[in-house]
Image (cartoon, rainbow, N blue to C red; front, side, top):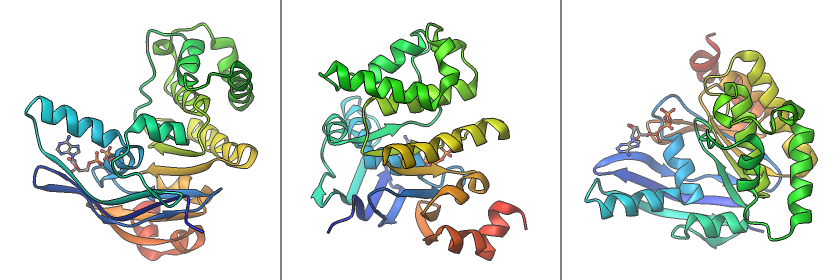
Length: 252
Ligand code: ATP
C-alpha cells in the first residue's frame, strides 16, 4: 500500500538559491504530520509544492520575465505522480491548502467566504453538510455570518480560513502556519479544532508551523526542517524528548 502523500528528493530553487533541499517525506492516511521549522526554513515553499501552487507561481514568473523557479524530485498522492499536476486538479482529488496569513476575502462576508470554498461541489446537499460541520467546529462564526471577513479578529479569520478550506471537502488538508500571530488562548482554540477535524472527519493533515510547543503534542509524527532540509524526523514522543528540539523550541 502506498502512503497517502509522499515526496521523493524534492528540491525547489528560486534562481540559484535552494528553498527545499532534498526533502523526502511520507504522510499516512488519517494522521497529523508536522513540519516544524523557523522563519525561512522552507515551510511555505514546501506547502506550495505539495498543493501545486508553486507551478502557478513559476508560470507567472516566467510570463513576466521574473525569477527562475525550478522544481526537482517527485510528489506522489496515493502512489500517483502529481509533481506537475495543476493545483485545481489536486484540489479535485482532495488536496486542499489553507495558506499562511489566512488570506480570507476581506470584503466578502463570512458566509460568502465559506461558499467560495465550496465551489467544487455541484451537490448542494454536500455543501450544506460541510457548512454544518464548519459551524459545529467554529460556533464563534455563526453570529458573524454577515460580517465582512476584514472586520474579524485574527483568530476569527484563522477559523474562517480553515472553514473555507474544509468547504472544499479535503481528504488531505495542508495548514500553513495556522498559529501565526495568534495569542496563546486563541492558539489553543485552533489546536482543539485541528484535533476535531482529524477525529470527527478522519481528514489527514500536514501542518507547517514554527510554534513547536503547542503543535508537537497533537501531531502523530513530524519533521524538523532547517534551511530547506530535514534535520530530524520521528514520532511525537521522539521529537518532544529530543534534546535539540527541547533546546531550540522549548527553551530548556
Ligand atoms: P516563513 O515562516 O517566513 O514563512 P518559511 O519556512 O515558510 O518561512 P519559505 O517562505 O518557504 O520559508 O522560504 C524559504 C526560503 O526561500 C527563504 O530563504 C526565502 O527567503 C526564500 N524565498 C521564498 N520565496 C521566495 C521567492 N519568491 N523568491 C526568492 N526567494 C524566496
